[in-house]
Image 1: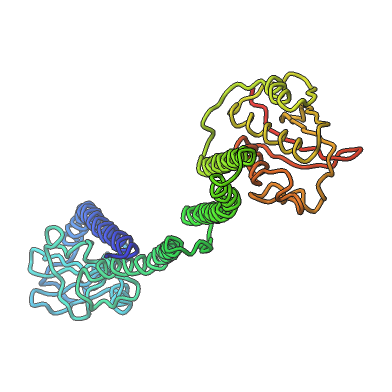
Image 2: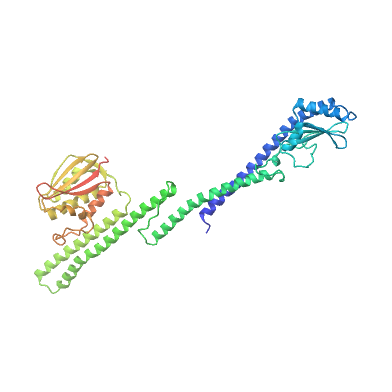
Length: 450
């Protein structure tokens, strides 16, 4: 399997190569066009100078001194380094600027063949100098002139003049390519290294290490993916642990009614008629307890697995409270409140709170409805023994019951846990408070989305 960083890096390098090639070709074309344009202008000017000097110079049969004086005079007038050779290539004269230019090695040497066979040498500044001892090449850039600038004339500052033509441009592009390629590698490798760490974390989590989390570095998309994975991993870990606890507790709670049913069934055949009726009622009670336990376990599992509410109804909270309060003879007070939610789940939450209050708080029950900002609150009040402050959070845990209440009044310990799940599924909460004058107050708070 090819690594991602290699594919990204090869892509970057390939694009860089293409960019360097296209840039070099465009640069070459630009210089070529510029060379043609400059050569045309310089060629016209040099041709005019050469014709002017040729007409003004003494003939080849004149004394060398006369030829030298005339050439130096034109060199000063035109401010151009000049030199003159006879028809045999022997140097007759050269201006001081010509000698100085040769010593400095600046400019390019051009030649013009005069009609009488003599050769006029002209230094043109601004181009690459010819290597020492290299002959000028007449006719490269126009009639009777040396070659003009082109892409082969481009050299790096550290490139010696003896290097072959064109090496400068190639070396410049090569240095650019190596620099960008070397700079891109650590960036690409750092990115893919973080992706590899994320991959290893996902694999470990998938192998069963639910506590596995990945490091979050940076503030880019990879960091966002790592943060999302950690959040999802936390939710999955909490859900799995919740289901494990739910299954373990449900298994434990199932044993008691099953054991009682087993004993009652075994005694049913040999029992007298009066005792048989009691045994039948005991069996029916245990069956109802098992049915309630299975129903609440299934409802808790559905609430854990559901991402959103199954239904979004328009709920008349006062009417709902009146209906459920009538079942347990509870007094209901409060304004009319309408909200959006799952009516079946809200009814189940209110019913669980009322049955819990009746089971542990006696017959003095009341339900109060109120609006608290953007939330609607349903307060179920009783006059029972109350809940110790240290245990007011724990009573909402699955299968948790207050000490001494495990077998006191029935129930399986899932009622308040379901109320909390239903409230959170609606974006709300539930809490237990101490009631003035004794007893407890359970407050179900749900956002109003009328």
